[in-house]
Image 1 (cartoon, rainbow over the protein chains, first blue to last red):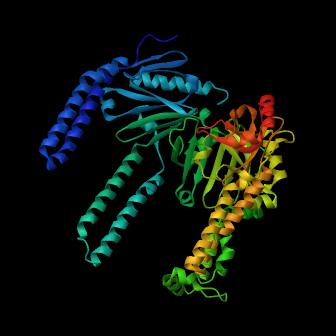
Image 2: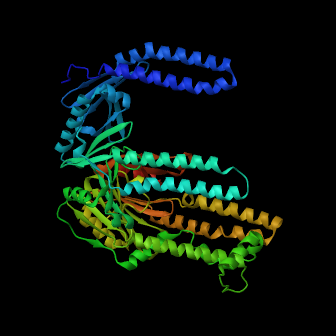
Image 3: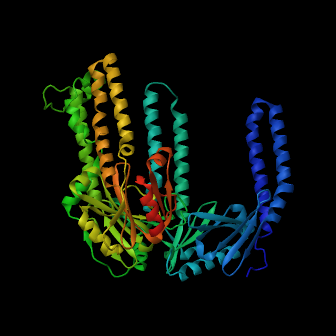
Length: 152
Length: 466
């Protein structure tokens, strides 16, 4: 039975917005190179980038966050993500080889992480989980791995 | 997970590998400075400073990643934490490890370090799921967890290892015979090689042979001999045995490799032979498991260069492959096997005639060097045609085919066959033949293919047996 709690942390929204802002800042810094050749072109490019950043920050990221869900049951993990291309994935704990927990510096500050579920020949990514939930998924995967009699 | 004191670092030997590249880069920059500043071409300080900054950055990164790469060996798996800014944490359970390799070079032996590489079906990176440089004590702790009573030992004698090294040393060794008899090669290759020969003071031992031809031959003999010695040392102390649920193989003199392959993960057992081995009635036994395609050709070998009866004896003991093979079908048409090398031979001959009229005999002699390898290729393809077949044993499916210049005889347990495919092109539809492909359990799409089999036989066999 699926748990009712969506384990995607609300801090994921903050981290994604910070990430978008960082990308925009880096792009603006790179735009300075264009400024050397043509101020008008650099300004136009910067305007486009700013408009794109605002659209991503205030529209796409909140939509993406609201579309992301992750539920854990006794035997499997169910996750949904995507706005334009909506994906629904169900992965059984038995088929997970092991879990990878990734944390960027920003995620570390806010106490969230990304979990990569590695299966035979493929992998699935679940972003924005709290560290506690990630560790509990990792423990459950290992419990299923140790309970297996044969690998294949 | 947060207590760093329960985690261990890798052996410090791994730093030498990472710093080695930085040292080489710095050295190259220094040499460049010396050469170009003598010629007055560039001001010395700019590129030297850049090289120094780059090397310092690389060394700092290496040291930081060494300090942040931690691991802990528990009863059920290996926990790993790595990364400087972007941290990664994962645990590989021993239950899911399909192949585990312990590798120790001569320098690592002096330093007390061992490389431990593991592979699971997850395929985290192109090179394997985990690669750590551990202290010997930690590596022994990992090995102890996999311990079980040992089975019968299969050891290979030195003569067979020497033969195996010779077979795999250099496929172009046939050119050794031709190079001394190529006339006037020096006129084409020019003055430089003659100067090199004089510098090296290599004595002339054959008459009526150009200097360059003899030098080329001597260089090839030297390279082939070095390759033979290196291969021989790589295959020395070769042995394999079963240990619980693993097949264990060990080899090597300077670099020792101990490899554990889980029995349940073996998708197929392969008997390989090159054309020379086939003519001598020898073959080698290799395993086809998850992760096999990441390793180079001979790393999955468990028995080098033995007679076919010994190989079959080993298959029966280690893998319970029972019963005599019953051949179901053989290829019908030889032309599709030798079509490609015949095309090359034809093109080669036409080109030879053309350049003979334009450039004379000298240019022809170079091109004529390409003819013997093509003839060898045709011979190999003929042998592949004669040997290719599909067959059935009591508990496995047998496929004999070829890949590059090696004949491969696969023994695939029925439960490891993922799917099979029968294809026909336009000409095969007319002639009633087909290509038969079998897919086995693997990370990538691995297809074992036999061509030009009679379609009716194959269809009936597939319907009844598969």
